[in-house]
Image (cartoon, rainbow, N blue to C red; front, side):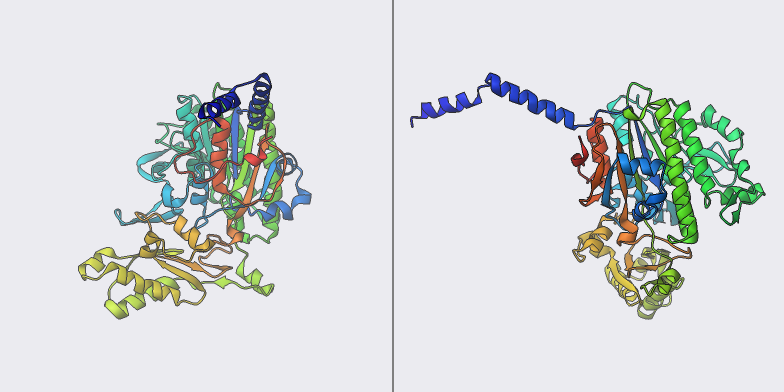
Length: 521
């Protein structure tokens, strides 16, 4: 065929005939219809230490918010975290950033800061002060190296979106809300008042003062919960609220007040409310996942979530709201309960790791203090001493790791060098430890225990790479979301890019997730 004929044929194929124009219009309309309509309000909810199986185990007794999510929402049944350790600060930092600790810098609830030669928390900030409560240092997201969906909303809308974070815990209020939030509020255990930080404002807003001045915490004195009675003495009552259902009730009531006072969902741009219910975690640590207390707090959480959604519906209308619910981690069974079931697991003796490492290093290098700090799964060596003795840091670290690996029920031990070079076993546990390692803040030795083995003094705890700690709910509810069960594996990191897609804003800077477009109608 003559070349000119080919060009003519190709040109003809590109002509937009009336039929093609119609098909293109139909296709465009289909694509637009598939994306959910941009909501007026995002309600992002976290239940602290809420395993996915709690949704299934207690399903017949849910008649409130969980029931609504499970019947009307998109329920992802195989959602996991892909980092180590699985703890509160990391889960909350992941939720609306989509970032891994290796990028976000949030490597735990707390870690050893070599520059300060002290332990720091994920949100501690000596440059700020507490407001709304007693004098003291405040908290902020300054250690958080990436941004969140709320930050992207603020930047895209010229700051017009309102972003509020609420929890019992400072880290759980601050990290999901991000750097540009209009406020983050948490409960002060010494006063029973919601407080904040000078990072956000010089004093808490008037509506917060009004809420606190009503002394709602005092109303729980002598309250009965199962076979527990709350203390009457305020100095004992306020700290006890967190490990009771009443901590969650305080958070829900405060969230309703924030919703009304900040007029969330009524502004020109989309607003964001993040609410983290922490009592589930305190109760889970105190009694374990198989306890009557955990069942009870789960049922009460269903009721409280239903109450919050009703308040949102009254103010905004749920047809104009997108709700997303998850948890920050799961929990391991109580070792003694597992033993009675002839299951594996147990408790590591307190101090065994530090003692073993010190003994090994002293035997080889001399009778000195070779450890600067130890955390549950981390060992920070004394770099100054190692340098002064003109020793090779990598060699000393390998000696320490070998000592840890020899402790019964340690599954694996990793050196700083291995984690920086990525030389670990290529399975999910190796991947998760790599994902959780941020070198400027990381330890010299990280280690994993065998399944169902735990460290610490709590009755039950979490932090491993195993399903009981990583498997959590992810549920979306709102206009344009196709209800149903979605059994394909996803990661919690997928939430942030999905919200960014719905909101037509940039994906948060550290996000590694994907858009969950399969749930779009």
